[in-house]
Image (cartoon, rainbow, N blue to C red; front, side, top):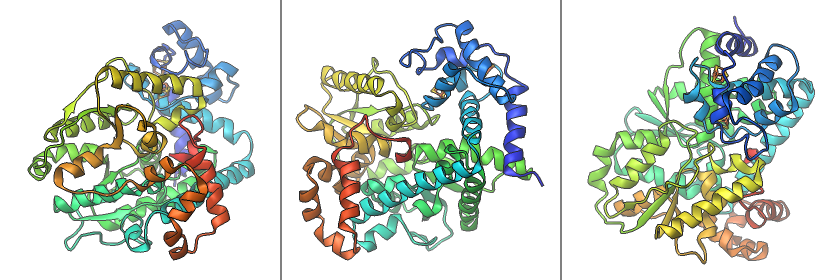
Length: 445
Ligand code: SF4
Ligand code: SF4
């Protein structure tokens, strides 16, 4: 049997090394080299960046410039469309990072993966519990697989991923919408049903494989033909890495389809539109990220279908990244993009800036304070038009901006979940008070 690691190596050989002609087009369209001070201004300069990555994947060394390019890939995916040889350059750079991490040894990879996953997992637990009572939290973070609203066989799995649970109102809104549409579903997600990205990024492919296979096994056990993934990082991790590698290792396709939630919802607009009867009279721009093909267009379609919403495209804003936290490695660039986006909203007289994905929401939800526009998540607008409201407690806490005040405000939840206040204080300091859009880390997908 072909192992996961063998399958990865075969994919590198067949999908990258056998195909890449070093044309350089992928680097030339990539938005990241320029703000990082790397030259990819022409196909020729791009070719130089790529050829050194190819050297690394053939077992040699990469130049510092090429290694930097690999490290600052934000996953926008412009390169995928640009490649004339059907290479996925985003996968190519992920493999370059993997080779670099593996160079540090298995033990280091395992320790770093454990640390990265543990940090995320502890924060998700603390921040979700301080917001919601156990019975409501269980709806979006069931301890085991459970039936959701399904009295029939589930038509879909609603997959939260891990980190959306920090902004749980988004998940609850999605479930309310599925209920309103009478779609039978099961809910999966939370750190116990991870995609394995934390271990994979650190080079611990063995643990990543174990986690990913367990989660895929649980998807299969529902017998739902479609998994609706909320998290864009999960879509990319499963789409670029887990599914193709699983299929290469097992010579068989996964027994279900994974689709970004917004793409599925846009495909069901005929069912959604009759439910959206209340006008939402707002001029709405979206925080648009291109990393998941089709998700941005789907979100625009959904926004336009909400009665009363005037969707405003912000043409001058550069669209980069899977979600905004991916830009954190270049904080000046990230700040510039955010400023441009806010300026464009003001110039276009937008009164609502709607995030599509949860990391963008988590980072910016409080920044509408004092500005002429409000920042909400797109699912809040969908809910408003149906008559569903779920309070954005994370935003409320971020706006409070004071650890003692937040702890006092959440006293009943802290007691109900027996949360350790000192640990909670540390999470709040790191992620609610001092977390600004330029301080996040990749572990906060
Ligand atoms: S995925 Fe985006 S950031 Fe990464 S290499 Fe491709 S274009 Fe550049
Ligand atoms: S665009 Fe494709 S073929 Fe050209 S250098 Fe990039 S990966 Fe290679």
